[in-house]
Length: 370
Image 1 (tube, one colour):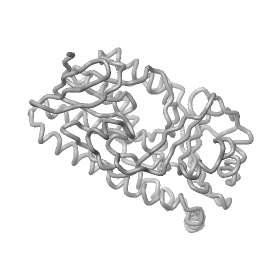
Image 2 (cartoon, rainbow, N blue to C red):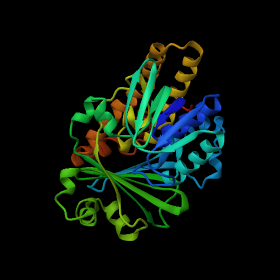
Image 3 (spheres, rainbow, N blue to C red):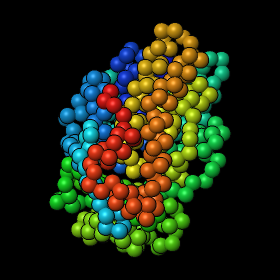
Image 4 (cartoon, helix red, strand yellow):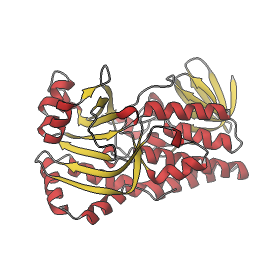
């Protein structure tokens, strides 16, 4: 049995950043990820600049990546209404394929120990965690769960959201379209969902949309769905007509849940999508994942000084609520509007050309610079 001071389950943005933060702070960190890097993930691939100072503070040289600086936002409805605005903080576009691999290499250089295996369950007993993976067991003093939106671990923990079937599925692919503006993120409403477009590294356009599963099941394949449903929004019709998909097939995730989650489960700190998923239309899930890694890391550093697990759990829960509850709440409201084409059209008419109101709405789902 392997022993570890801190174990992290999941090597996405939240898991990798927390591993880097804690390893640099003098801890011995083991990270368990089921997939070998690099690989793609279903993701909007836009990161708010609110987390850039924190990444640089950790010594992560993100300037070495081919990131796209994004400072403009465009929203359209299927009724050909649209509105554009500058983004208050701005952000950058980069593929998860590139960014996760880059963070993995950086963490590895710092000394983070990686295990590529699938975790089946964990238990907390005798003030220690026993983590059961397919091929081995790990005993750890502290545990961070960063395994994403949905896992069999959630079933073992009897988390409430896992018991409810959800209607949502996410679809992603990269495309070539040279004349797509690299400084703009776009969100296009269609019947039953919405689609985000933005430039990432290697001049790809990331196309990621959320749709109800029952809507997809009416069609033979994704191509037919995009032609007959998404393309009713003329902006998306123009995109699919002019763009060439670079993936062999689209990436798909099902059972995407927006139910409330708890951020501490059986003494493990939950971060990223494991703790709560903001609606993709808010374009802020990646920044929230990185921010949550910072909160968990700080809580663990404080634990090391006082060795009070109850206090650590409480302080992390409070920090999570203070930083994210409002953003998740307003994200839910915005999603309900955007899922109803008539409401989307009405909202665009009401906002009209008032860029100040739109910026205020954007700020409701974004945080302050870290």
